[in-house]
Length: 371
Image 1 (cartoon, rainbow, N blue to C red):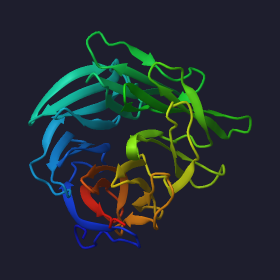
Image 2: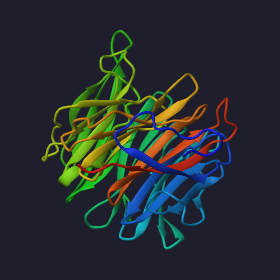
Image 3: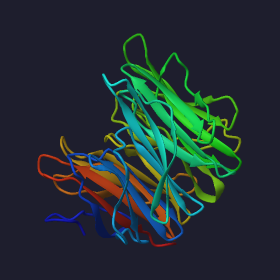
């Protein structure tokens, strides 16, 4: 059931959407970014808008269970969140300001029992940096990743957010780089990012890079799209899933590609071409109930955006048709998801559009019958 006059509709799906819940109405035309994280039955929605960055507790089905708390200024350079040891860790990217001798940076906020503290401020994002990531290693130390960008020059950076932390450039200085995505896996922190360039004909070429711990980074997939936004998420039974957007074949509409990372993290298995994925926000996956779900914002018309939800087996074989979070006139540009018990909770946000004067942040649970 949707908010307002037009409900969010299921346009054919093997699973079922539960009731939809409105989390926030942003102050301004757009949502900068959002994230959702959980720890048992506790679910936390995080988003950034013009008025700042906020967190709100949800119940196991995505309904608000408390008031929104402002944790800091807007994260116009992106945000990411993870729950560890009872605390929510939020990475907030702030772009530099032209003419103000301000290069921006990445702030780490820790939210515990409603109290907000700032743990670290690292790096520089530049005026055009976009995208951050956060992971907590086996020793409980936070790691931050971000893109620094000025004009045509962009680099991927990483740092362990501890006293005396030093930043490290992940990407080659010869190419444009996306923001890195991080994932703590066992005793290692994995990182992935994209490096792209133009060939002789002016077409985009590139590669997805993968690094495990202190090992040298390796290319694991070719690219023909300059907004691939690679990601890493836990899969089923200890697997790791790598995802990225790409045009396959070149010149086609971008789709979200997914693959399992091999156990030594030096290569990936067969690549599965999943949902179309060409909205502003990144696509992602979430493992839940023995399956892997793909969450991919994409275009529906010239002005409308919807969120595609698809279910896959552990081996990344499709189970059932695509489900769609859609509302007439809405532009759902951002989405993220978490697993709570045996079901998925999707957090998604719309911006102001031609037919809707206000954007919104909403949540909905996805329930699938077990076989």
